Image 1: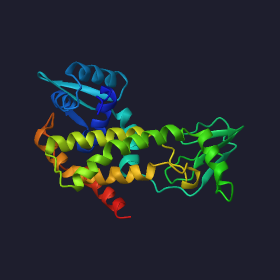
Image 2: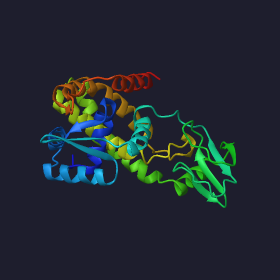
Image 3: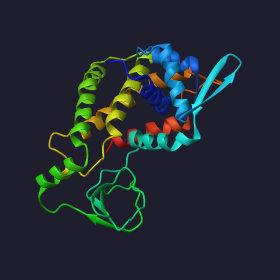
Image 4: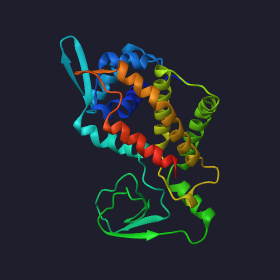
Length: 272
């Protein structure tokens, strides 16, 4: 796989490993982990500095060691991403139409389709603006609905990202099915890449009703692959984290209530 961008990869690392374990890591841990993915120490330090400047991380020195934790201002961003990755809302079966919201700000889930009219998938996690909210479902014109969805949302780009994810990780699933059992460092490296590439697609995905998606859209297949591999890789990956990752208090735990909850949610999803 290509070497990932340092800043984006460190965001993935914090979201998957650090946040459910208190949100703080030693710089040495960041450098060692990123080195396994071809990211140099200088790139790690530059990326961390940029994340501090942007208000997403905060640094602290203790003696000669530096530690970085998730900034309070960035917590909502990370919680939003974690919900999509580990506990997504059920797929919608229709749309919401917002009317008369005036100058009220809309979340990124909404797209404007006319003067004071906006459209969003009817999911439980959608933030409703002020004004009238109508529920709508498609009664006819499936092809026209797909064409309209393509016009308002970047479905082709999302589909390409999901296809790339499946192409990259289907061989990993096949290897695991054939008995491949990666040791801790490899399992963690694979899981971080898994999360990183799936996140790249899932955070752009508007998560529309199935009848608004192109026939070749593989978001569902990508999701099932993500869940299966995350569960398979996590025992060894989390064991490696507990044995080698450090924060300001010492070794970070292999498991926490938050990591166990993530796994429980994914296991429940895999059984549906």
